[in-house]
Length: 481
Ligand SMILES: Cc1cc2nc3c(=O)[nH]c(=O)nc-3n(C[C@H](O)[C@H](O)[C@H](O)COP(=O)(O)OP(=O)(O)OC[C@H]3O[C@@H](n4cnc5c(N)ncnc54)[C@H](O)[C@@H]3O)c2cc1C
Ligand code: SF4
Image 1: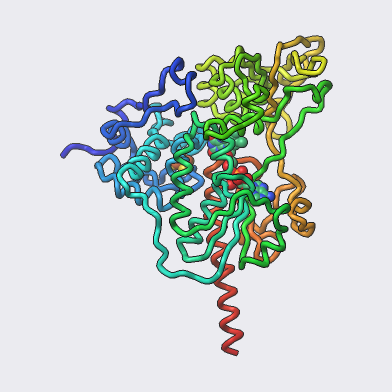
Image 2: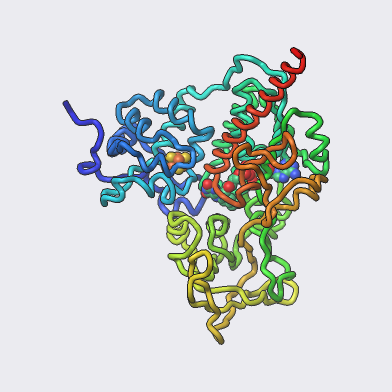
């Protein structure tokens, strides 16, 4: 009988074809083509079916990867999809944007034996995209409607995953969001060339068709306080993400044309969605024809430089104070940016912004790496007398995000927060210090990943269900007494 799996010695690793740099620089479409069926089958068959699958252990959702790879190799795609979606509310999103090199694929045993990892992310995407195409992904039917209701603040991946799980159990779920579209950073942060918007929109449509109520343009703290919302529902989830941009306090910071990353990315994403965006249309937040300098070395910075390339900037430079090996951004995304013509200025830190009213240049210092700091990474130190100027007429600051002041914003000063401003929860119950108020996603972890937000949303749903059930049980025992 022909051997079906363990083909990694005979079959070379292949990823879906990347579109040529010249083509992808001209549009905002995703850069990887889809696997064709035979390729997906073939590549799945490279899996070594480990007894203890390290890929699964290192996937935050504990996805049952070896099983869905085997089913794909056998051509049993519908079953592969059923298994894949049983642990993940958005497998097609994770397949596209998880940093697999740091998660599942980075821990694949055949990668460690020098054969090249199984391309898990691309196969996960292929399975679910096929399921959508074939009509296997359908709104779910609730078996038993329950009276209790849950209010979810924030329609990002954490809130959406929690909403879906609770609705499947029959609860009445309302999701509130201050933006006009659900999806959180999947819609307004992450650019199309990593995640096309139709992928997110078809998911949120499905949730709506499954009975989840969405209230958009509703800002908790402005339209209602946390306590007012709490009175309306039996439980609340806070999943508002982290949005306060970290600042650089250097001379010239108030000059015009220096913007936080999210202003730039949101404008670009809105344009892609067909919205009218005045600051883009009048050229302010449009990189076309400009010398763009992006400050930062994380995934958001990579999204800014690559968006600038597609907007036809004259030049795009990325300043980062450490070297390439020490960049926090995904190695894959740095590689894509380099291919697309971004000029990385490693070991460089901004000293001042130069200009009269508008920014004209960034004065920078060269850096060298000193001894490791408390995080174990080598500390960047200024090389004295190394300063010089880099021409810039658009500067984008991408230095990370902190949480907003939620107790103040929500008019709930009792809400417990950590020293970093993230919401403090009991890690077992996922409940905050306010009874019946739970929290999940970036607002608890700090800026993290979509796959972790989904995991947190799912965990929160389990805990909220336990809490709601205990309320029902208590009521019954009081009535029986
Ligand atoms: C530019 C960028 C690129 C990224 N790229 C990747 C990537 O490639 N891969 C990856 O895994 N992760 C990536 N991330 C991280 C990822 O997007 C986040 O970790 C994830 O979206 C967090 O999910 P969340 O549900 O906690 O919050 P969010 O996605 O931020 O959603 C929070 C929602 O809450 C709403 N909200 C906030 N305050 C209120 C309020 N007061 N009232 C009502 N609604 C409110 C917001 O409008 C938003 O819709 C990226 C992040 C950024 C910024
Ligand atoms: S969810 Fe992310 S980490 Fe888990 S298998 Fe999929 S791509 Fe890998």
